[in-house]
Length: 163
Image (cartoon, rainbow, N blue to C red; front, side, top):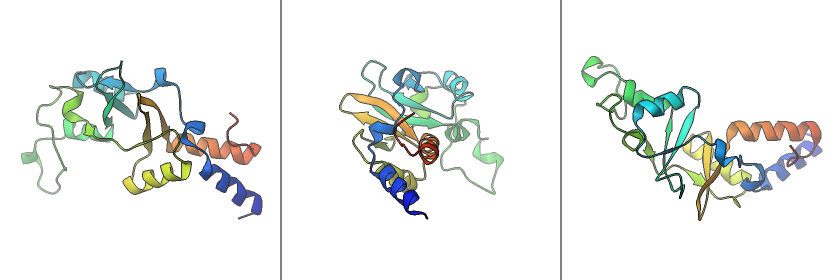
């Protein structure tokens, strides 16, 4: 690795999450816990995940639903298969709400966490996105895709926070 590349990656790791995170809270895939499952599925048709909050006013994060989680809704009943098992199935089809199928206690980070710490959390938990929370609830997200894009731009223009 060239000296300038090494310096760039070191600088990248030390940046704060708030410097690179997606701050467009109005554009986050955000749903309330009582949203019907069929509405969740319609959102996941265009998004890879949704953050589940108590309500949109306080934005208190309580869960996440990814496209992969939908397997528990769409999976056939257990008597259809014997050669593999899913960790969990939701036997009610699309009856119920987001809270019934969400993964509770999503992995999060704080705005003042370093990028290297966010990346290490992603690696440790085998995930590609982190919710960014402050004392006031969900304030944004940081995704692996976003970090790749920012780092690529930095290598092209030698500036990480300009974009």
